Length: 116
Image (cartoon, rainbow, N blue to C red):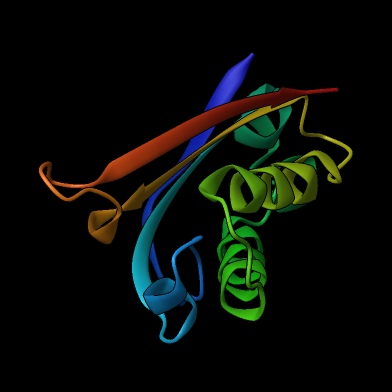
């Protein structure tokens, strides 16, 4: 299984359980890791044998910016489901970093894995 990664997709989303988190958008950074077989795409130089990562990035931004989830886990789940909707994708990992998610630390990061 090969891996395609898109790192640090910057989005602004309403996300959180506290009242002040529901009032304005917060910056999140989303990483996606996609497991699929890329050997034929590499051999034939054919996008139809891979996935269009610009489309995946666009759809990830759209999901995040149109959502109003309470939990990072819910947003990660929505992105993970979208990734698995591609026929060629066999597994996915979604990581989301929220700088405003921690009072004493640098932030909070959730990572979730998904498989068909």
